[in-house]
Image (cartoon, rainbow, N blue to C red; front, side, top):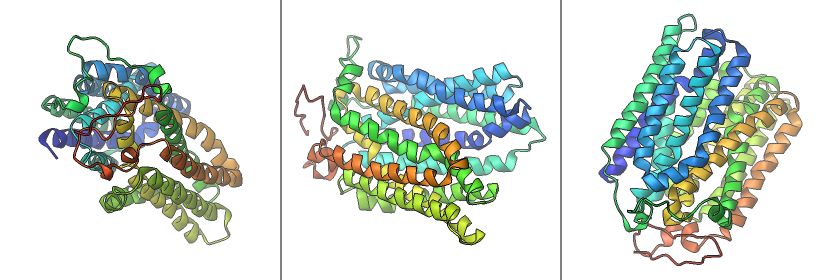
Length: 430
């Protein structure tokens, strides 16, 4: 990796480390530590997600017009303010407003970081760059959650305030590290920031007319709905209600998920980076379908409690294996589909789809996982198989190099610039 890419990865890892301090404990902090009740805690979590939905539609154009670096710095500062304010909040209004600021800041950071990775990587290094980011972010989240768990004390609100201040400090570190990055002016992104200050040509109409990107967004929604949207809602409710596992076991299961990602990421990368992306994603759908079947055995089978617990932990571990396969395929594909002047808008659109899935997933999966155990498992087995079907259909719309970047004859900053079908353009490889 070049110096710029190393600094981006370092800042991304440290911000994830800061998030790990607070994400597992946000509900407990609002509901119990600040004694604002479960209803307020639910509102805070909802506002955190809704803030992301509110700002992401405007983020992409800002990135493409101003560049990802200043957008990232502003977002990191905003998130730091939100984290500090939430750590000091002791009322409903202040907690909700602080969560909105924090949610908006962290949401904008995602596409800004993704665009910086695109700018600082080539076709030969982009897959590994995104895999490394996913690895470091999961490692940071896991370590942050582990350290935070040793610091918190429900009887001492100051201990939670400390966690939020550490999180804010990590966001500021991200901003400082980002400010030292010298962004390249490579040919592939030379038109992304016009010298005359005008807005680049593009917009939602261009994106919606791009069938491959629309199909990728639909696929992304199903992926995040069927996996990430169930971790802390439907799957957790199913595990405790149907499988009868102890709530503390969910922490072990999440740790197993993170451990598989950390251990398997680069082994998996060697296996998938020279294979077609669409087929790798299709395999993920099959792995996750099997994971849901294992979960079905945990709650609907007639094995011992020990077997049910092992099955639930295995389910989370299998999800981690699928996540490790997705990290070097989906995010780089978004970048390779984007026209030069719309990298930020494509990344922001995909981040918006992710947030929508994360908002809808718990609302649908939570009640089903708690009471409709059989239908819940069947539904998400079918959704997982749907991932495989959608991935194979998407593969037919990709160019050979977009689907399999290793086919590129020479290193290039752009794998292939894909534009809407109404504007067929062949991008140079050099």
